[in-house]
Image 1 (cartoon, one colour):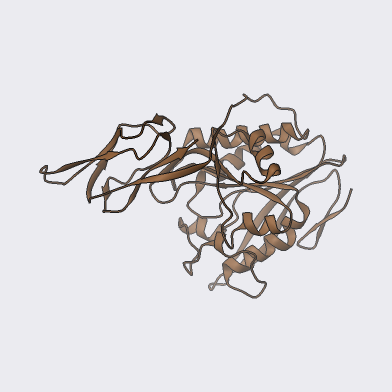
Image 2 (cartoon, helix red, strand yellow):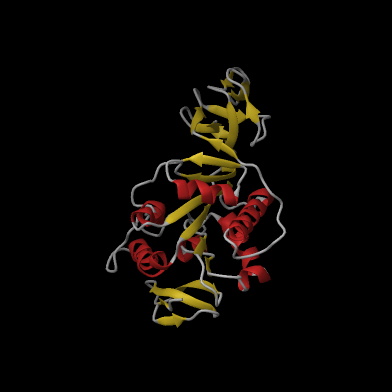
Length: 313
């Protein structure tokens, strides 16, 4: 088995190490570290990355990985290596924001640059020090502002390795999602690495279902790779070939009685938009049959806003 080197630290087979990906300095001279937890078996096997906090307000994945770090099965894998980065974007986490201080999205900064912006430097360190040593990865996210996502995996159905990993993780829904330019998932793919994106819950709000599915899916994946042996409930995921948003045709107050994760039928009324003075009310009609995989929890909406995300089998 090879020796890993992360930020000038050699990590040998059989070692368990908490190390720092890199240290970044703020204008106040305050220094920020990005902790990395590495658990290596003495036996050869796959290297799996779990990371969260790419966006600072996406806390459900951070909570899932916090629980993983407490599991003895994680700390002593039968074979291979488990790498966990609970908070990739530390500064945005401290600021409770999605974007970096320069308003850039870290997940659009890849592959990064050693002399670039704050986000570009973080992306560069991940691409140079973490991606080359892994085989597979799961990148934990949540819905955007006010968007509550039912637990789901994003992968590319044409990629057989992606699909097999997704089946092993077995989130309730698995959505065919193309690679996005300058994202970690696409840049890792160019290097021959398969990274899945897990989505669950809403920004800045704990969601017990999303957290638990993230934990259980991670353990199912590790079990399938022979790295752990953990008692975890099996799951039969539903595969979704595409998705569409039901959007607001008028501005006003939005409400729905539908629960996310449920099946809805085409032309069914799935919500209502009312003006604040009680004079007008417009129904939201389902554009197709499908599963409700995301709901906008913002009650005050504008014309054109995305309200309900529908996954299509």
